[in-house]
Length: 290
Image (cartoon, rainbow, N blue to C red; front, side):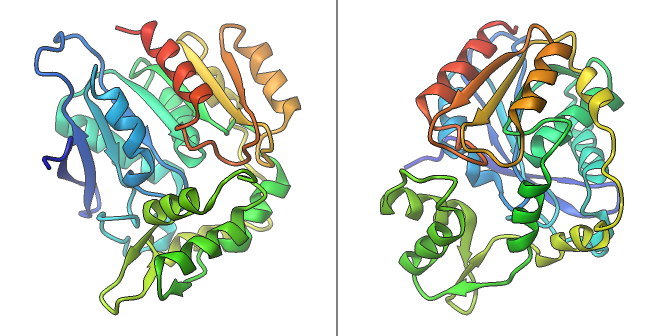
């Protein structure tokens, strides 16, 4: 069966070969139809957006980049480059490579931080945005939970073992998942290695910046969030999320009165974007954009 996307590559400023999935969209789409960039979370990759991208590419071109150190993208030579500002530079290189002046951003967690930074550093490029379970202020409990598992090079003999391990690790975020959904998450998140073992599909060194920033104050990202102030904006928050609090959501709504907020029930960090509530909200946002 023919895939709905092609695997393509671009080159970072420091010479890495980086991968993205390119869903071309309909052949007769209007020339002014803005493309969508889907940007994944810290430990994820382009497979995270596969069902959503297949849904969205019926109407628009969808580009799903894999950040350095994930999936088919090169691993960084210097783990200090595993940080959001460098990732933003990588996205800017991809935009230049493809001649894209404006786009719609869908960012999960880390991808949402990148969305805010892109809006702040390149005014006018982000025409509309979805922030998936992320805001300019994050909760320490969520950061500590992520720091507790990122960079641990575990491997598993079978997909069932991998799925059960994910269930043990993330079960509180997805209490209603059955084994089929955990298997699907495993196949989005892990990969079969050359030794036949199933392991996480990222460079374990992405954890180094977490270790190096224990005593540093978090940056003030409210100005970056405010850079999204004049565009259609959707915030998705998992009802059970430990990364973004209701207090932060209320402040985001105050600073961006036009933002739509959707609480995804019975989900923690982060919604998969396959939920009916998430899909409907994303479709509403896209209907506002050229």
